[in-house]
Image (cartoon, rainbow, N blue to C red):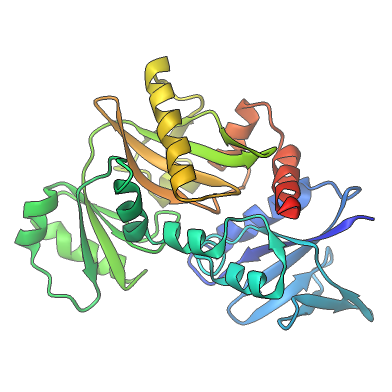
Length: 325
């Protein structure tokens, strides 16, 4: 008997449109002869099952079911394609845990930890993982620009602590640029992270639980036309994503070892995509995305293709791993 799979997409953050694209790619690539797939839109004003004719059926939040023409639909597994809140920060996954529904992501605490850049960096540092020098601000804190610059230097990156797709991030090159950058970041979050500039190539690494083992996908080198890998660079073609990355075998082995270690120490499962900067061939960890983009332009699908893994194999594996838990 075919399993019912709910593909959740949308969310409550600035990433809603990207998430809807990722969810639809998953829906198109999961074999309908093997699974009964349903698109579920999780939005601020409604949770609905959306059929192929765009008819909407409300989700019963008591047990995450839907009723279609008098038939109650329940689910065996949730495929999580929500970037940001509430999918990537663990909120909705805690709800699924409470009602006993399996899902393709890591446990909710791990999702919450990695979504909070500040806390994630604090944990990995304890395991000897190199990171940028950073300064934290909460909304309402007194802002002493001289103190910040003394610690992190210029240029520096100002970013929301809990946000994705590079929303709200700025590269501040001068003291005068700092306050506008801080104000921009605070529009996305009440906590912000200011980090020193690391000079070197950016390498993006996909790591996932594939057939029961931790697998590092072929790495991607980011060469952007913009000042950094921002929203335009990620989604509007303002960058070159070179897979596999142009690095030596020795550097590749070093990155692979660090990427596996980070995945393990954070107790991850499911998809992840982490960003590293190479400074004199030493990897510096920036952040981890636990619901990376799955659109046709996204990096994880590119890396999987380079590894000889089709989107169908990638998505079926995620479902199979979740059902075995």
